[in-house]
Image (cartoon, rainbow, N blue to C red):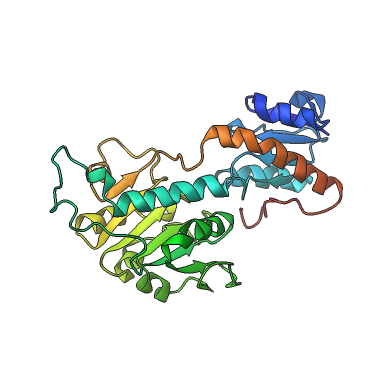
Length: 302
């Protein structure tokens, strides 16, 4: 298989693929696969007819919908990196949950400020958590949360059981009303945009916590900010925001009950370390006439 890496070649995945007998070439040299790690403006207007597969280095592909529309009609198939970073993102999610509940952002120079930490909570204390979008990251997070003994509801579109969860359901008002924690892992689509909004926040119990490690626009930022300010929500953990980056003067930065990380639940070195192997595996499946392991449904958008 000949492959091109766009927009800027990265040494580690290229070396991984070459070690497995694949050849790195320029786009004009008619590759079979393109590995793509840029934004929509970086994608070529035209691809050589030789290109059969585009392997995207990240999992969320909502910003490439126009690319899909342009090239899928010519028979190009797309794969994302879904599942490749389950462990890194799940660990980062657990860190956000603990940081919120242990009030780590609120640490001050004074010692043993009991008033400041009066609302400190513990995950093991009969808590209920809803995973909104219980794919690979969610399943890994369930394993990581097992020692805390939490009651976990997995939420997906099908309602098909998710291993390790106490129950699996589709999204209903009862989900918003019954849980203490909400971890957002859903892909961004028209149906999921602003799924956490003034209405759904109002259905949550007082003292609930929202953690978003999926996509920023899953949450209505204004509604979330208001709910944190008025004390309805006890806390929020955000690895992604809308807008992104969050403006330096946004009130969320100053709230002790809001922990924000700069879209670092997974970091580039893990992307580069793993994407070569996934690209090779997807090519093998494609060449065998099978569905790729992380093939994108271009009509669904993920």
